[in-house]
Length: 102
Image (cartoon, rainbow, N blue to C red; front, side):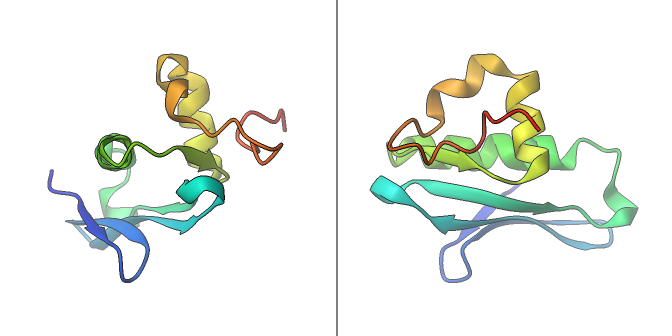
């Protein structure tokens, strides 16, 4: 799966059945990425698209040597299922919203 980092529109995107799947972000403290929304068209759901897209986005973010603030419910749940990946999560100045228990 090809995931494109669309910096102009602040999103990671891939084309799937039904259209565009994306993860939206805004830049946070210390140039971190706050991942706040994930969308996969209904036609493409249940095919592991969001997982693959997030893994590709995290790889690109890691290459920039910055961290992630997870506020999107999907991303929060993903990190709970994959604690081995939590090293990329932002840990500064109490902005760390991703580890909150809902």
